[in-house]
Length: 286
Image 1 (spheres, rainbow, N blue to C red):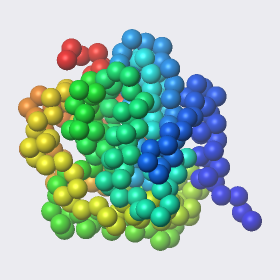
Image 2 (cartoon, one colour; image 1 turned 90 degrees about the vertical axis):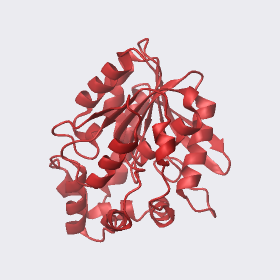
Image 3 (cartoon, rainbow, N blue to C red; image 1 turned 60 degrees about the vertical axis):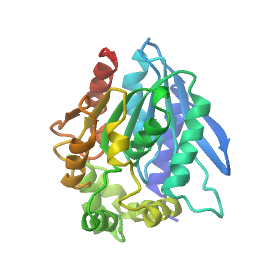
Image 4 (cartoon, rainbow, N blue to C red; image 1 turned 90 degrees about the horizontal axis):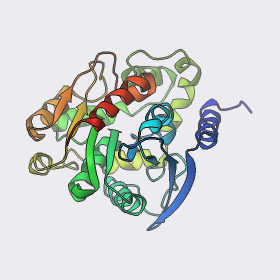
């Protein structure tokens, strides 16, 4: 049997994070056993929570966490239900509501002071939901190509269809939309990528999600904490309409930037640049 590269890389990345101080811990939240990377920092800035996207795992933030940890009190990286080492709830489907409810309960139990929430893609939508529910627990909010915008049905349909990846060629096309410049190893793992987007939790979220699942315009506009939205100029997965929606409805104090050479998940390609901007934002007076 051929060795599968992606699972091996995930195990290696998890081992590396654990050995560098990002310890694994599990919390039982309802019927979901949630896996969390939790590591002490070396600085005085508030704790940072990193929330990953659909089909990803906490290891996608491994290099970003290394850049951030020396400057903050703590780094917490929970994994969504059915992702990474977090369990699937079993008979229940992983819906957007379950994801948000589970993550809300997880962060309520983990955080002992207000934290800086950083969310990418689906993790951005989860971060917004938590900030809406628990505004006093969020010191600052950083959204990196966040999902959750209320786009037209046609745009939504195209986004969901993008995850219908069945072969190596389709996987390469999908991954080219994630990266600013796809790295060399994409060619080695593309044949395994259809299995990633066909995982049960991923398909269930896509099946149950709707364009109206995210925050309302009023909820978004009422967020009181400082907000930074990073939407790379090489964003090719989410529609431009989504950024326009956030521009219209985020509160006036929100800062929106479109960095060059940032794709949909810039923490994978530009972890040092993303970390530098997060830390600069963390140091700004509230």
